[in-house]
Image 1 (spheres, rainbow, N blue to C red):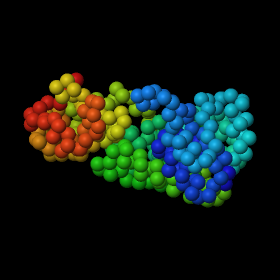
Image 2: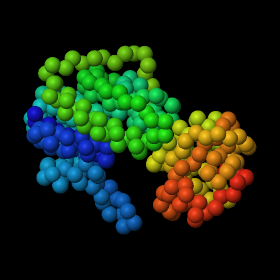
Image 3: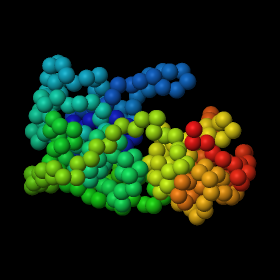
Length: 304
């Protein structure tokens, strides 16, 4: 098929690769514009932009698709279908209608649960037992379109957003190739009105750990916010990011370090910290971290 691909971050790259490997003709790749990054603040292309150029594909990165000029340029590509995954711009109705088979979105949740910007984070933070990928026919509403294909996967007990992100990216790539192969025969399934939840964009203000909360909530927040923005706490006035954890035995005052294995007491139960990061340093596993900064038993990690 003649495909327009629309995506921006790392999550989208395996999908682009899978479409190319499946033999589809990529008419153009749309992504977010390069933005200043790094110490020199030089414009840096997005992961999809870089990969598309390496594959020799036409890349377009308009700031908006609202103008008639951009919409005409999109329509002139005469695509059979557009595949959209974490693109980052709202698609006007004219764009949605331009390809022969419309625009298909790869969404990282089991719709209608977790419509919106941060479905992977929210699934882990809410303690969902499973999540998955939906291939959705796009319409004007926020992730409201009918679903063509879906596949569920369990969320592992110690899985972080980074780990689940990578698994779902591969799953999405496999599922969209399957969907395009079966497209004429797929029957769109309208989303039910019950069970709708919204995955609001993660705000950095959510990231501070409240040790008075139950250990299950603390553990989910640590894993759900890893690697970005990273849940954090303070010790001796220094901020420490907490990037991996699991539930542990123990009890004590909230935020109290219970032993040398970094079991930390919560309002109920405890968590074991597995991966940490000091300000200005790289992430480290617990053993390496403790060699550089001993944390004595009885230390209190701050929630304020």
